[in-house]
Image 1 (cartoon, one colour):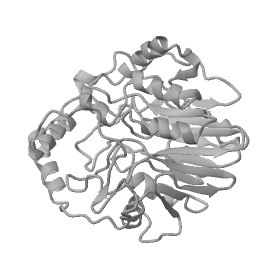
Image 2 (cartoon, rainbow, N blue to C red):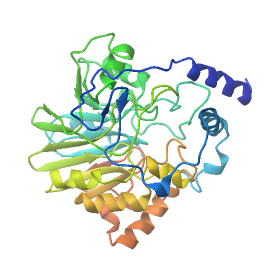
Image 3 (tube, rainbow, N blue to C red):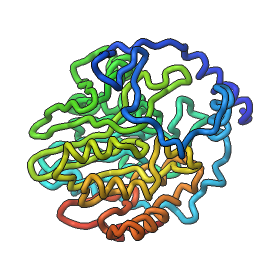
Image 4 (cartoon, helix red, strand yellow):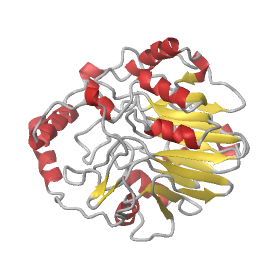
Length: 370
């Protein structure tokens, strides 16, 4: 099937999804709630205003982006990968550790025996269809079959590069029983419809600033500036957010997708002791209006500093071509941002896909651009 025909099929599939939504969790006392969904806490940065486009022109542009060959975004050098340290990963019960699976997907081992997956996507495309949409540029750093038993899955929002039905179904069927899914409001209903067969017992839904407890951990859903959608008709129907996973002696922050906003200062005020480790998005920042919902490497370093993070890992690059920059441009711009803001190379670095950061050891070539 040629690309224009595929694009037409994709358009029809998206438009067939329906166009009405009522927020079942609407609470008029919460400023970010709307009767039809949710909203950001703060207005968008006018410097990042999206060029005016009509509804169909906007989706046509997305489809063209999904359907091109991606040659303008090819890396200047191969994306660094490494075989995962499976012996350590499967034996580790006591050391905080973070393994990059690719894009925004991580295995986080909390140091108390709990294994957590963030935004697990193992498919070849971040898309509703198998023949169109951002295509994975290299295999996941950890395959589903290589994972230890997963205790919890934390989801940031509903976009296809963060929320995968096939991956979550596989995890729901893992040996030893399903993990618990911790999700923003509304994604719980999507999970029941698409993953759990209507069952609720392994799903915990949270609103911004709410938290859940898990075996000595506190899991906090935090407000960030972004949006949600899986079709043209359900924009902001489900909530989005960042995550903090805290326990005595170690705090971890996962940014999900976010545009820079005052939400960062709000988070910093509540977590005044900072974070020991963070995974912060650094990719999909070109063209400039993408920064309304993603951060540039310069803004990511600013977030690192304002949240008082001791070590940060750059994510959301090198896997799916989501922005218009080259897929390996973000680490080079991150190096410039570190230098400009006086942040040491080993304080904000990138991992190889498949590599594990360990609290007791520093990864090789931290901060190195591919």
